[in-house]
Image (cartoon, rainbow, N blue to C red; front, side, top):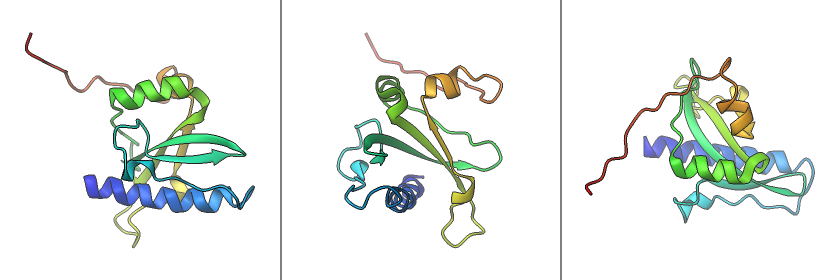
Amino acid sequence: KEMLGLAAEKVIVSYEENRIKQFSNNLKVDHVALRDVSAGFDIQSFEGNEKIFIEVKAVSLSNYQFHLSSSEYQTAINLKDKYYIYLLPVDPSKPEKFDTENLLRINNIKDNIFSNKSLWEINNDGYVISKK
């Protein structure tokens, strides 16, 4: 699962490098997760000249299900429109294993996911338990 996540991040780094070339050759994509897994995002890129912060999730094309950690959630809430979740479907039939044509780029997760109950189902799938 960890290797799949890293492979998905590398696909998105390449995707972002190509995407930002459309508006600037001077901007550089930063694969932050390679040196800081606690950042709350994987990649720093750009939308125009503005920095954006990307969390990459490898997902099934059938339901786009993913897990969002509390750190990722807090980072998303703090960064609002500058935080994106990229949902990258896994397609084992393709040599690169990913389906970039069906990639979903979602920012402002509070409005676009958590408040959009007609499109997204949110389940609390675990507990954090500690001894007093």
